[in-house]
Length: 581
Image (cartoon, rainbow, N blue to C red; front, side, top):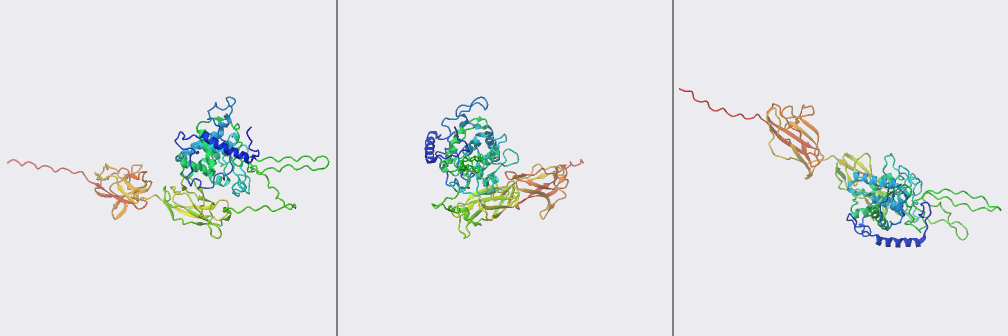
């Protein structure tokens, strides 16, 4: 019978060794080689050196379930409710609401970030490994888990040390963080990565629609293309920084790609093996247990031993009494050595250059921040969070407004490149240390309007017209900036009085407005994606002569075009015959 999530899993080192052998054996037997898409599988793939350099991980590297896919390929079974499931069908299937959440997240990401190529099978694989598909699909109709799914507290005792970042808002723990929900986000990550996947106005890590959409965006940041195995490796490792985790997730991805089917909510198979089995750790995910009732005193006045204290959410037991020496005197437990994060005193700029970009362009310079001790010594392996503040449409590359980056051995964290939006002006990017309260460091970046430094006509035909007529050719120009196409650049076209007087003329050629009235200045013009600007038709009044049309753009580019209005030439009359004598 499958192990229940609330049950304590202490299988010992022997179980861990057996599991490791099983993983190796099944890796060999199931190795799919090259899949249908021509990608190398995780069994043969080697992550690139920077595969996990982006940040700590979505889960805080919490424990995960190590159950492997069945050896037999899944075969789609009849739809839910048609009869008893065949043996193994629940293990191969995915609960209906959970599967729907994965597929909706894939659709949303294909629209928001089409270059990411996120497959729903990746979300399903991570959901299987992290929570057994939300405990076998134990969710309400809106996708919220029937009870919280919490990982163990990350107190450094066999796990990462991540002190509380949410005051217990998500995990109920005001001392340390715990991974939360069916996709097992730690609170500090959910704070910026959370999404509203079921359009109820809330971002709830315990809701499979919200969590699946958040996981999709998390995996698609940094312009990763998940159809490329190297980027796929990077994305998975950023979720949980473990080679074994990468291999296991890829096993489930390949398994689900071969086919799966929908099963009723609440009927999925619960995993039975965890990556930390034998470590003496509490199970994850788990539900808070219920306190037991003390027993009645036994006859004879002897007092019964009290029932064990209730476990904390996530399965972690309450704090035990400190150990005693042989004399019975309690001894002070050894203090936890300070982590790198604990030693950070402040952040310093690490030589960031002036940050300026035109609207729509990527910033060529990146923000660099150095974490230092009080004595000014560099602190490596510390997570620094960069947050874009204020109502701006500038983002980091990949579309996010928050990025978390680990400092290198020199204590420096380099933020992803900024991508300017269309709103111009100054924006602020704040750097803070994850898991430590120190003053943030603010950077200012400036977004200027799109500009052109050169304009040229696309044709060279003379622009002429008879009085009272219309010009046969429309004026078209191309804008460039430093030789490249200048798209989306604001422009103005004015029929001016003279080369020395750029004010609008009051006679001569003109444009027409929507009501057919003559206008000699056009504003709010913009070049198209190819840098081209084609002006409306020009008309002439009865005034003849040479006139000037001046086109100017943001950035200072100008072009003056000559227009001629002249009456048609008439032929000279032939000499009259001489009068007869």
